Image (cartoon, rainbow, N blue to C red; front, side):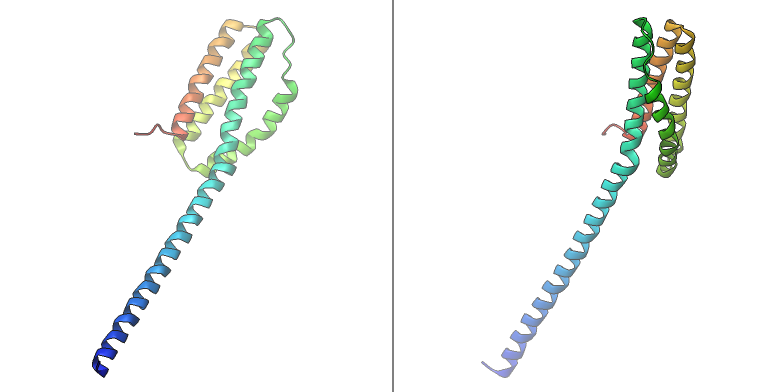
Length: 153
């Protein structure tokens, strides 16, 4: 074996190690970036989307409970929940703003308007109109959720 062969082998081994090191470094950077993106997406879902979806679910539940309390002739027992609900509305509006989706905000406002109209009607005692407004709110909620979570293609 000559010194030229030894130098050739050393260069090949050195280049192979260098390529492996650079590739490993690139893979680690990609893995970290992917992990940061996954964590950011999880935080977004946990702190932005989830409270909004829960709020919409509670809105529909509150409407249904109010309607059936009124239909059964019992006193509507949602005043405490309604107060907590009102307090959380600003939080939901802020999260909707953070989502930067005008169609989503518009859809939520339509749902909120249906909810407000429902509350007026349920307090005045018109069950037929209240039921119709409750159905409208459910339709608006469906649009809102479709806007938030478009169906897979």
